[in-house]
Length: 148
Image (cartoon, rainbow, N blue to C red; front, side, top):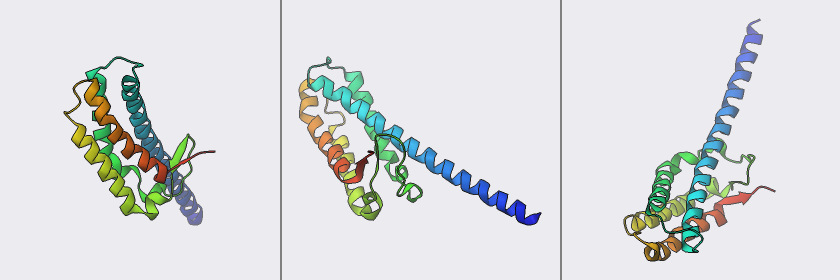
């Protein structure tokens, strides 16, 4: 009887750990999708597909700042190697080259901080967005894998 209780307890702990990992992955994916949505809105303005809107710019910058604050917790060791559903997942390089990954995070943070308060119209958005986009893209090229 005691053995059964121990086995059931261990199974429940295992299921709980897997559920927690899946939740973490979903939170990470949601954060990154939020970045993509906001970056897309800025790109649409730069391309002339949508009119310039300061509220949209401010919301995008706030999203980026939120991501920078959350980055350390978005990729914990508990999700290392997971290949979740969705379009993309984190490459093992996130954990194998943690210093390089953190350097990309810092570069993204610097680009966002430097842009903060400078974007006041379409011209300043056009001048600033490529730097932010370069930081996002550089990290994605190295630390993100497309699900096939």
